[in-house]
Image 1 (cartoon, rainbow, N blue to C red):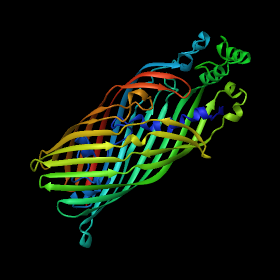
Image 2 (cartoon, rainbow, N blue to C red):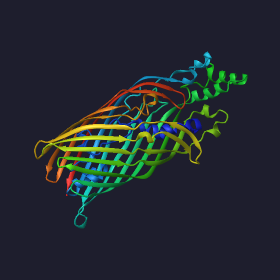
Image 3 (cartoon, one colour):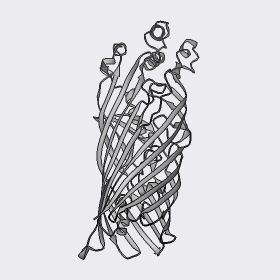
Image 4 (tube, one colour):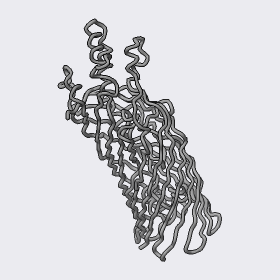
Length: 476
């Protein structure tokens, strides 16, 4: 087995490092994950910046930690079950299809393979939070700490599916550790700040149609009689050794980085029954460093010059996880019934143009994404059935940052509707157990993508997700 790394193939690293990240967790637009709090999940993700008795505010709005009167620990885990399927076609050697030469145009052919199966799987998303009110001379101060996964996904298409040249496996993990503090300025107003340590870790793979790559180079050089002969013998003859889908290779890339960001929030109660909150989380820049690995068949490596052009090595790209603006409101209708509203803007426009570089700093190429900012709007409510049980429910709309004109199987994301229910059981005076279920209905996602090696994939991905969550809160 031999490996290869060429400038043409390395341009796929942009898709690898960034585009793959954007495949999109089915539970939130882009590759965002909001399942930190099971209580909030039961309200369709509302109330994250004004919640009471929920230590996850150490992550979502430090200013709301003033709502907690005892040291409180929350442990939550959500199980996200993404379901999807692709319908469409894939043409290998798509650049040949428009040729005026009938023999060359005949090189274009169906890529073959299955529809990819279900790219999703059951994935667990945990979070941990603790909030501690101080006392004595520091009685107006609160400290908090939380660990969560704000971004991430795993999608795994069948290795032999028709879109294998665009995507096979994508595995993205982004983990935050947030240290936060809050100051209660008055009974009506508080502010909070947090410092975020973030780690991003990416692994992805896809196949390479090296037959198309070789024949494309030969076709470009067929301007002389010798060039025409080479193209005919190597690509056009019935027994030619190089043709689309006939000389597949494989590509994989890994990348990781650590960096820091910050978050700032406020909470205000203008009247006794109404509380509003706002939180801003900063962008976090990453220089993803990793390994680029290409596997190519021996007959491709045997071509003149290939041994010097193909080499595994280090590579990387810049990634910026987006900033967010989150607004929440809670209205206490009476002692038992509360209503919540949520609006969040995620600044995905930070995913604009991605520059791919070798380890020595040489620019390999650019990939254009030009994502738009996305928005979430949701309404939720909860009702204390009695001292032991609280019921919740909510609906929401989450809009995608992607666009139909350039969506790929690495980004099968679209607008989605959210429907959720939840329950809290106050099992003991200091212990409560939470459960929630959220149904995510995705709008059909058109796919219109050409791989780095010239396969044109068109169709759509139909998908949905079921999100189950359980959590526990303990007060000391």
